[in-house]
Length: 397
Image (cartoon, rainbow, N blue to C red; front, side, top):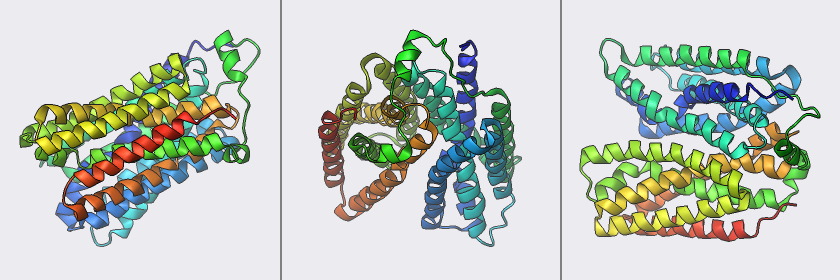
């Protein structure tokens, strides 16, 4: 089998996910909507919740569409939906927030979910011998979007000659073009008898149907582990600036640390992928569990002692540990449940994002009620410890 173009596909997929990840820059993109239309934080939070919900549903829909109409047509649909979501949001009048929910939350969420799932699934099929590395690079691109494109968007929104409407419009057009180009370039791998030895070993993994995967205790254990780790990461990221200020960092440095955390998140995805390929799934999950426990302890001590150095170290570790979650998710499904139904199986596993977001929201509530960081972080550390215990019990079915 000729896989000489696989690195081209990896580059194209990473660029496509870099643009698709713009949807995660909501903390930046929501600001002008609140300023111009008077929409409240809870109202705008509902929109992001809708986006994440339909992102997960888009992953499942995308896997079904791929089987029915093929990869190219599926990605073209994702390009249309994603582009339209941003473009039509740029024309909102502010008379009803429901239209924001429709265009950004539902339409854009579905489009990004379809693209995300199909791009990762397709590219990873070309890297059965390096699925951890492939997943890490792709997800680094997706995770870096908030930092790179989000920063550009912040500047264009603040520019009086450009403004938020042109920013949304430009993102929509660019997103459509990039995803459409990806649809034309990316190819589904056709397996034959000339696979390399490393690929041949990977192909020996039993191909589980969705029903069979859902009956596997390993699936549910891994789902809990990634959910708990993602909840820890989501919680810290959502209050990273507050943690920095509480630890004694100056305002400018606190803002900078949010960006540094994002960089570490991206690096964590590649590092995790390399560890996965070298040491396997279980050891990689143990690494992520331990890193999350250390991160929680370091940040808690930093806040309690107003330690700038420990705060910086803790946030960097959180970025590295949180970066492990998507990489492990993508590689784990292929490693445990095979390639044939990977697209659908992976999209279902990604539902952990919804549960993790709910736990993170509960943590934010606990922070407000307790009036301090001690109780919430003790809960996060406990979740990471439980995740480690579950990881140690995971075995292939």
